[in-house]
Image (cartoon, rainbow, N blue to C red):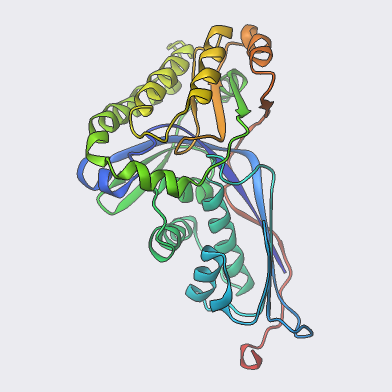
Length: 334
């Protein structure tokens, strides 16, 4: 039996520049972190006592006798890719799916990590990210970028750079004290709206040429935000001002990014004392993150009292196998 624990990600700057159509021409960069909310994937070989050969538990239950019968596209394609059979897989998470935190990619990374462990194999973070990208973007043909799979695999507070057909991960060099102050000034709220990121990305891709000028500006903000974090003499509140700038640009990158309700939430937070913020993920719902000075945080909580406030801490581990019990499995009997 194998249990994996994989963090969700919080993307601050550069979202959208991790799309291949953009970074293959212009390069791309994302500034993001993982935080202490996780998905857990429990995997074992199913004992041969049942009338079905594979049992899956996620938001649905599946009992099937053939991999081809599996409805969940990521599980079906991952099992084919790694030649997995007779599996019992259970998924659970600290936060809801379809909420802008890269949950589907965290699941893909955690599942692949678990499948390899069940085979008794170690897979490094680079290969794990590469295979999760291939699984979601090629085999499942889901629209989207590359940042989520990389963040889930590597973990930590990073700048991820994209060029042509590759990526590199660079930890942000920031003192523990300044990093802790940043975390204290960030507040996360759940809007209550969930959506399918791949569908939003597909709609927004229809006007991808119109988005390029905005994405180029958003790409420049990655450099500026990194300088704010790494220069101890710069006012950390500038990070919040840059979040406000990137959100205003992001609103112009697709008709599904925001709604009247989302705009109202944002404006109420600013009036209550937030310096800036953004909706996480592709847009349309999910989680907001705001940069709020400590003395204004109670005001923001009152202004958004209908929303669920989610305290969090940064994390650095990325996906991990947290339980491993070797199993004897004879595929010849399958």
